[in-house]
Each structure stands twice: as C-alpha cells, then as structure tokens.
Image (cartoon, rainbow, N blue to C red; front, side):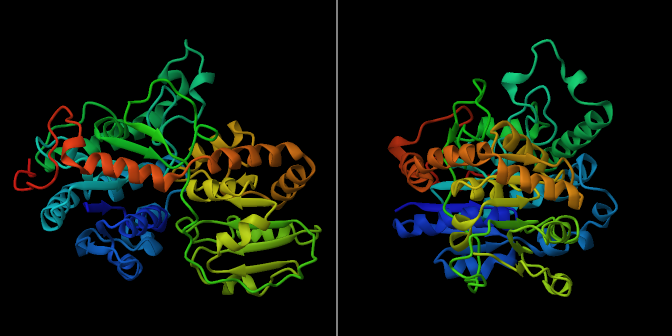
Length: 446
C-alpha cells in the first residue's frame, strides 16, 4: 500500500479528474489524501479519500471569483484576463501553498505526490534536494512551449510552424509584455518561497522537473511533437466524472431529432447569455433537440423563454446523454472537449478565455469540430455551424476516429502502473536534485 498525497486547485475542472483517480487508487488498496479547497471536502470524503483543506487566506470560491478578484470582471475573456488570473490566482499563493503542501506531505508521510498541472504550488518542491516522486496530471492542453506559445503552450500545431518565423513575429508585443509580467510573478513567488527565479517558463519547469507528466488525451487530439521531455506520457481521458442527478426522459424514445448539448462549463458561466442563451434561440426553429447545462448556476434566468425543443439543467450526467448527442457546443474547456470525443461527438467551441484558445485550436487541427473564435457568438454563427456539422459527415467520422483511439487507452490502469513504479523505493529512479521514497520527510523543506 502506498501513501499518496494529491493536490489540485479548487475548481471542478481541476479537482474532479484527481478525485476520479483518487477513488480508483483507494479501490486498489492505497491510502490517498487530497489537498484542495474546503468546498470539495464532502465529495472527497464521500469517496473514501482523506482531505486536507487550503488555509482560508488562499481558499477562493470558484463560483464567486469576481468577488475575490474584482479586476477580472473588468477585463474581457482573452490574454489580459488570463494573465491576471495567472498572476493573482496561480502565482501569488505559491509561497503559502508550498508551505502547506510540505506540511501535508509530512502529515501523511507520503510516498508519492500527484498534482494537476495548474497546481503551481508544487514548483518550489521540485527544486528540493529531497522530495517524494511527483506525478503531474495534465488536465488542460499540453502547455510545453513553442515559438507561438502564449500561456498554455502552442496555438499553432508545431509541425505547421515555418522554421524561419520567430517568436517576435508570431506573438505581438502586447502579449509578450503580458507573458513577461506573468513570468515575473512566478519568479517573485519562487524567491518568496526561499528559492531562485525560474530559468525557464513556469509551465516548462513543471513539465521538465516532475517525474511523470501524464496527459489526459492522446496525439489524435494533442499535437505530435518530438521535443517533449521524456517524462511526458499520453494516457487518454478518464471516465466521465460529472457530478449529476439523472435527468428525466423528456423526449420520446422514438424522437430521432439530433440532440445538441450546450454548456459553458463550471467557471466561465457567470453570464449564461454568452453561449447558452444564443444557442437556445438559434436552434429554436431547427428540427433538433437542445439540452443545456449551466454547470451549477441557477436555471431560472433561462426557464422563462425556453423554446419548445429545449431543456435546461444545472448539472448533466454525461454517461446518460453524451452517447445520444450529435453535437456538443461548449466554450472550449479541455474537460468538455475530451468528454465529447470519448463518446465520438463532434464539437462547436466558442471561447477565448483561460486555456480555451489552445483547446479550440486542437479541435480544428483534429478536424472534429468548428471554432467560432469568440466567447460571444451570434445566433447566426451557431445555427450555421450546427447545420454544417449535421450535413458534413467528416466531422463525425473524425470524432469517431478519436473515440476509437481513446478507447485503446486505459488511463487509470496506466496511472496505476506509474504509481506502482514510483512509489516502490527499489523502483524509484533518482533524478538530478535527488528524490526520496517519501518515508523520510524531515528534510523536505528547502
């Protein structure tokens, strides 16, 4: 039995994948504890997983981010908003997260640490002379940088980048300035944690210094690259992990109209008129069924003007409904993209915030969907895109191809194999900087 500590930033898209993994590892006989926001305590403990909460001063409620970071609401989705989030939400808490993470490692006497790839509180630990092995789970588009990288890695497939184009030609001056500010924020956090400024971009440091980086996708969606560190593995998506009640069977079993599912995810869903509202109106007169999920927000604002062919719920059981869907319309969150493709469903993506531009670029490159290149598409854009996907079988064929590739990967079994290899002292490879089996945690502080 291994003693495993896991850590995730306190939003559903980051916690739920790790909770799925934690539940599985507990079933395999391991002792697992999750370090995250207190909002998730009940769900974590119900799964038989131990829980350690963030301290109150860095435990932000993802449902009310604008209250914690009022500047965020003043910026439109895009690079400036993402830079602000990286500085204030991800970089600034690193010193406190680092201290609490080390305390949690000591408390649990962990043999192994598993974090999701946006838990940057692990960065100082990666430079420690002695530490347990670290596995990073990639829950966003693979962010190892290229010449056109902004915040989450390449937006243009690397093999399509002309060799004579420089970073300065591919990324505008304003965006380079934002990237510099973000890197400075991470360097400052590292110094505050007792370390040194990073020599590489923060995401490259995370990927390069961990023992395994397990990306929850395959190269049918992610870009094929020959410059990745040897730690990177593509393991395919996890089973659906959406928390939901089963939805009533609103439509007759013999209703053959295509089913369109629309979601704004669980983070960028404050204004449901960005995507869900226009989608309901755009498809009201088409011979389709529409099922909208608000990602936990109240459905009241949508119920009054709900078209006859539409239904709306707070949460949706993907297991029940994605196998029946013809199209998924989303704002491009990586979790929703992978969930749709796991069931062979083509996509329409409409989002430019967080990691959504990178996710949308992969959908287009994989030819399994359409990118509307905006967070606020018009009704006409949505309607025409739905018609195009329904009439062009190529999108469905590509989605089904990716589905078959995903089905050939068993993410949980692959994670189990890596956990067993790294948590057994005799099988734990030594990295530069030193790795301990995790039993002697008295030397974990820098």
